[in-house]
Every structure is written in structure tokens, then in C-alpha cells.
Image (cartoon, rainbow, N blue to C red; front, side, top):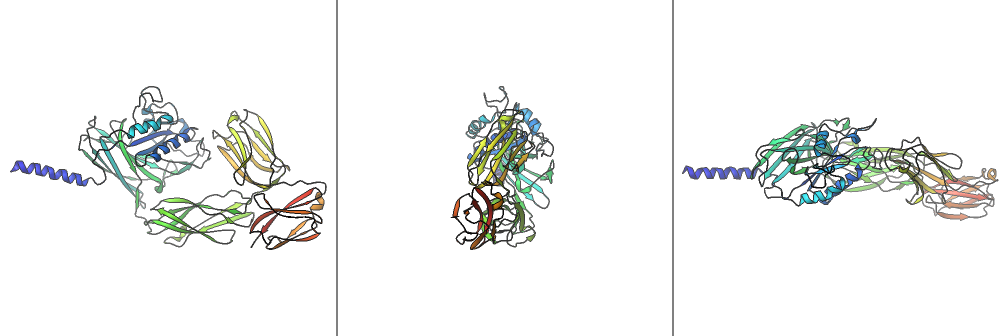
Length: 563
């Protein structure tokens, strides 16, 4: 009888163990990819590497997991720059035998003929990451992994539950389990990124819960089950960079020794112990540049700061205390998730400094239901423009362009020779709103640059510290003053703002043209009287330019129509 009981007990133990495997599959799977990218904020080609890695992940959802390791000389921050490095990066990079940046490893595997160092290194240049990932995804794995995690938002305690199941034998008697904490959506500088200090850094390694090389796993044969739970209190910051709980991600993987990654997995944590059940916060409102068109749409960031899912938010906004507009966002935000919402453009009356107010409805916490910002009217300039550029030792990196309100390039220049001063004369053919864009392809700025109008009024100026580039919005008027300028200086226009009509005085026999802010002529009057009333009742509310011309002399006045 005892001989029968023992197999039965063994069967019961095996069954209980199988039932305990709540998240990992016991069915053989293919390998998942862990792509470790070695990068740095001063690496000009690293943004291209980021894009390649992201594309690999996007094309293989749930099968590819990215870890960006900021390491090496290109990751050393300058004054005032964030330090994205960790204590773990150097050893991982050295093991890969990389010789340049960006570099990447796919499952820390050596791919014959693809090593960046031409030998046996696991680091590869970015052109190899996609084919290496595709090969890996097609291979059978003898290990399945799964992970789940949660964060207590009050204590910042992270709990990570990892399971593994061996569907085959490992060639090594001991493997190593690794748990990496990743942070996304961190704004910062990035040479070559073209976004100044607003580059969005993703998949950034901030901590290894299992230390440098992982936690030993000593049962590595077919049928072995691994079940580990880790706890870790996430600090307020890493190297002074805020550790935003909402941006955290977990990537887990198993290595045969410290090199070959068998497979892995990843997850985003759930958030518990939130203070409120139903609460939405206006997390941020994006800066608005100077405007010369009297319509603008603010961009805000809304965040679910409650325990329950948010699927709809009514957002109210106004400019300069004008009409309140409502936009309803629809989507899905779970706890601590956030998203940008670009609100439709609304008209406003120029006020020099313009104030924007955005609110959301009352909820459990009303202290986070309002954000405000302000922006200025763009200045208007006249005549031909003069652009003066002094290049540094890398003039080939410097280019520029001017775009009209619709985004069309109307003038451009560069690249240029090194250590040279260039003077460009720019003639704009239409009264319009324009944007001057100065660009440095490497991202480290250059020499001094000045853009000014025919009156020597400075539109834009820099000493050369413009990073990847800077932009300046401005308005432009085609004002040509003749010998009768004094005569037109007495011209007056009232009322302003106007509703149905305006009166122009002291402009006998003059011609009057009205333009919208796109530079399109929408009305014209000829040979007006000394005091002439003009009908503007058919104009929609907004800002217009009124050009008054007499005997070769012109003046332009801004008109606001309100309804």
C-alpha cells in the first residue's frame, strides 16, 4: 500500500505546484528579446538608435523589451544637465566589448560577424539590431518568464512578483534572475535629438533590484518552477532627477551566467493605496510661444490621480477672460496614467500679455483642477530682413529657415563654411506670421546669430548657445514709406476694437486694403474722403491689418473686430 501512496502524494504535490503558477505559462514558447542599448545625452547618433529600438518593439508588441543604459563619455553631463547614469552601466557595457555609441546587445548574445569590435563582443551597431532581434524571436526558449508588480503610492514601496518555468534543461546548473526598474518620459537634453532640453528619454535604466548580475537560481532542469518576490522603496529621485511613479516599468530576464539571456518579460506596475477614488488632475499646460494670429489652442496634460478608470473629461478654457469654451476628452486612463490633450484653437483679442485659464469639473480634490499660463503678442517688423551668422569650427552643422503661418518654407540657408561671417538679405513677399528656425545638426550650437529688420530692430539674437536650435515667431509688414510719411502720420482709425464699421480720418483720396492674419486681402476701398466710414460688419471676430496708401506712402494699423 505504501508504494501506491507515494506516487499519489507526488502527483498531488506536482498538481498543487502547477496550480500555484498563476502567471507563467508551462507551454513551450519562443524567446523574447531584451535589447540593451548603450547611449548618452551627448551622442549625436543615439536618437537614431532610440528610434530603431522603438520600432523593433512596436513591431513585436509583448515580445521585445528595451533597456536604455546611459554610460560612457557621451553620458557625462555638463553643467546644469541631468545625470542619467547608474552604478550598473559600466560593468554591463564593458562585458559587451562595445567600441562606439550607440551600441546594443540582443539577449547579450554573440552574433557571428556582427560584433561591433570585429571580434567576439556582444555589442552591435544599430544596423544589426533589427535582424538580430528577428533571429532571436524565431528561436525556441527552454524558459518562460512572467512578471507582475504594484506600487503603494503612499509609501512608494514597489512589489515585484516574478515566475519562471523551465520547459527544457539549461546548459548551466545555476542561472541568474535579473529585475530592472525602468523610467519613461523623462525630459532632458539630447544631442542630435532636435528638441533642445525637451527630448523625451524612454526606457531609461534607473535601478537593478537584483544587483549587478542577478539573483542565483539553482534549479534549472525541465519542470523547474521559479517563484520570487522582491520589494523595493522607490526613492524620490535618482541623481536629482525626479522618480515619477507613473513612468515606471519593470523588465525581468534570466541569464545563463552573466552573459547569455535565455528570455525575459516586462510589465507596468499597478498602483494601490491612492488617496482618492475619482480624481483627475491638470498636471501641466505647455508653454505657448509669441503669437501674431489671434487664435490659439493650448495643450494640457491630464492625469488620473484616482483609483478608478477615467474615460471622459470636460475641459473648459478661455483666453483673456473671454468666452469659455468646452472640449470633452474621451479615452482611457488608469491610475496615475496621463496624456496630452491639444485643445481646439479659439479666437482672442490681443492684449500684449495674454492670459490662458484651463479648468476641469469639481471632483474629490479640487486643488489640482486649474492651470494657467500666459503668452505675448508677437512683434511686427518691416522691410527686408538681414541675417548675420558667424560660424564656429563646424559651420556645416548650421542651417536656418523661415516658415509662414501654414508651415511653408519661404526662405532658407546653410550649411556654411567654418569660422566665417555670413550676411543674408531676406525679402518676404507677403504680410504674414512667420517663424525663424535656427538649426544645429549636432546639437551644440555655434557662433553668434542676429536677425533684424530694415529699421535695425532685432528680431532674434543669440551668442551661439542655441543647442540643437531655437525658433522665434514674428509678424511682418510690407511698409514702404515715401516722402509723404509725415502726412500719413496724422491718419487715425477708430473705434478699435470695432463691430460693424470703422472711421478713418486725415486720409483724403487714400486707398485702404484690409488683410487677415494669413496675409490675404479681404477688402479694398479707393479714394476715400477726409473722414470716411468703412463697413466691416461682414468680418468675423479677429485681428486684421489695415493698410492705408497715398501717393507712394503707406502705413499699417492693426484692427480688432469683436462680435
